[in-house]
Length: 82
Length: 329
Image (tube, rainbow over the protein chains, first blue to last red):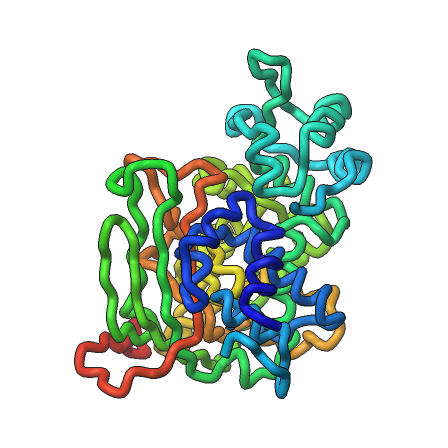
């Protein structure tokens, strides 16, 4: 999972996907203009992609493009963004 | 694109809904707002209007609804895909965790900022309460109407034992469980008339926190209605009651207990709602569950939620500038 793939997932739930272009991979998604509803949908898409519920710490850590990529990669996976 | 909920599902959810009383309703929510926040579109709104959900009509003939009514329709839809439903589902992950995860000390980087689209100076955010039990504010800045802070929250297992207080809690909780009072979103103006809201059979966390605090105070005990931010993915507004017992404030949260009720394995969490203080609730500076955000001195519109970002943070090594709360407020 690369951060570019994570960006695609995040863009898919955004009303204004162009907001994502202005931030780097470690920037806070909420501060960048992604609203709480969109962030909840990002969590939902992650669960759908992983085929399992996110645990509480994963939900709390869902704050940046890189953290989305990391969650989708999973423990021991290869994160092309790292 | 967001998945939209089918109109007939929403029409079914609107049947029997206790709508906002006309003197508190604000019929301004259009399709753009409904799509953005509630996964509804023009077709859904037209169907809801036809089904009789209270509304007005804009100059182009399109229906305008009360935002709170639409939120409650979404919550009742059972679609599992609306944002309010998903928010509740994710909240339950916290409630289903191990007790240690509710109480252990956690440090958070918190940012709160006013809604976009208006001059920052028009909005006012209620400050965080650095004197609250278990709260240590390591740093806090306010710029352009926004709050940025690093806060450590230490939860505590601290059951309320006063039988009369617990009986009052049970009365409130039972009214919610039985459906005599529907737990649903309530507009801020009606929250301020919490006894009327309760009498009309509708209550949210703010109404409930005020009703319970008022009933406890009426017995001569000390109680207060608190309001602040629920940290984590949701970053949402939440209110609860606190009662002064054994020389310290203890939390009472019938709403959290109600939300956990239908989920197996949450028995300990539900018991913890009767006194426990959770490590992801940061109170603001209010004892009456006042609005967290105001616009030109008045409660902000229902759609104008403060932006809240919170993420787990490292505990600062130095706490020289920390403000640590005592146990007896």
